Image (tube, rainbow, N blue to C red; front, side, top):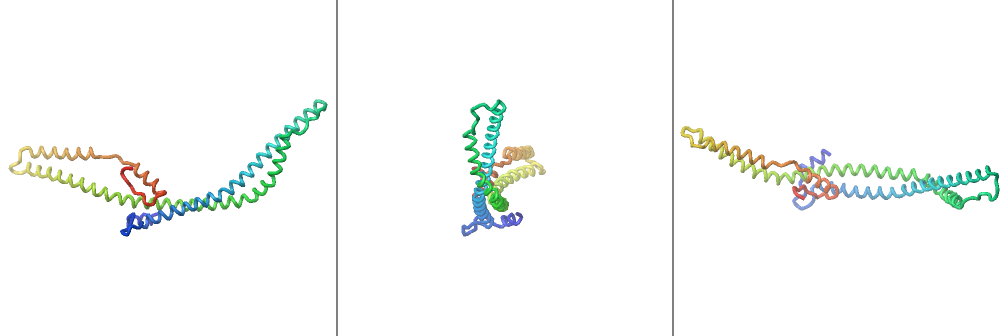
Length: 236
């Protein structure tokens, strides 16, 4: 990650010929690679899910068939305990259907249990690949965020230079008034005016203060996950 950030310090979002910087190009490649890895993961997840569903369905039907068989045995036992008078309880249609369904699923479930470990291993391998690519994508996002900050800082530097230029003029006026008020033939009211200008400077700074704004940062980081060319902007 340090290498990516160092690279971000040396590049801009686009080079002079209009192509992406190395940082943005690396992020773009990582985004594309992650999309492919996630598609591969989804593809191998489907077979494993289908096999697991077959096994689960066979277990459910088997339990249902067993419960119906137990109910039949209870009914027959009660009939026998009562003396076995006709008519003798016969097998229920539901129990017969459940037993037939369970038998039909048994061979499928056995085959699914045999195939499931390989399908799960393929899924785990793809999941590990996705995690690795995602880590590299996130590192590239951080490097691109650093680059975006350096681009945004150019605007900040311009605004700050203008603000400091205004402040320098005010300080210059204050210092000149102090000089005039402290000379051998002092300018009447100069020292008082210098004090007021100091208050004006302090008040301007207080009124111009702003809280840290995390919303643009959150927008940038969310955008960089899918857009390698996203920029840091003060407003939306």
